[in-house]
Amino acid sequence: MEKDMLVQKLDAKIYEKLDAFIAGTEDKQENVIRILHEAQLLFGYLPPEVQLHVAHAVDLPAAKINGIVTFYSYFTEKPIGKYRISICMGTACFVKGASAVLKELRDQLRPNEDGMSDDGLFSLREVRCLGACGLAPVLTVNDKIYGHVKPEDIKGLLTHYREESMADVTV
Ligand code: FES
Figure 1 (spheres, rainbow, N blue to C red):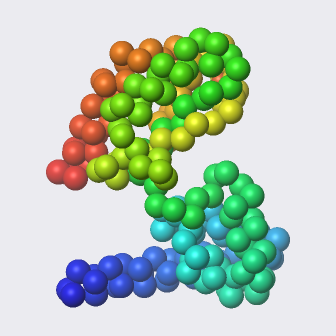
Figure 2 (cartoon, rainbow, N blue to C red):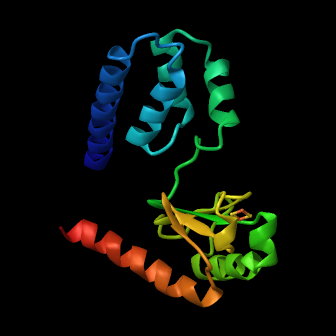
């Protein structure tokens, strides 16, 4: 019960921040993508209630907002891990062995159907060409690019981020 109240308070604070951002945005309808970016940064994802909140705030139909959210692959309607791993399955990466890297990632993370690892730390998704074909096979973790990745690199890579996350918690 207390935890629920805490979650509600946190949510209220995040909505306040979002409302302040919207209030400071000119031409709200023109800039609705910027507003949705900010909302996703604040909430981590864009569930229906947040989309509805934005729709009311910028005076656009909820269906229009949902259309934007589902059109751009950057936006997500489901919670995502702290570390978002995108593995390129484009032609160059595929030819250079991306499938084996993907298999290793799946074996290590055992992602659910939304691509999220058990501990909620990682999200895994397949993408097409990250524009770094010379480094194939390529994956990214959040904004960081890793090139010439081999299956045997994966364990160390995940350990690195698990340790980083632990350090964040203990600081
Ligand atoms: S095909 Fe993987 S980066 Fe281009």
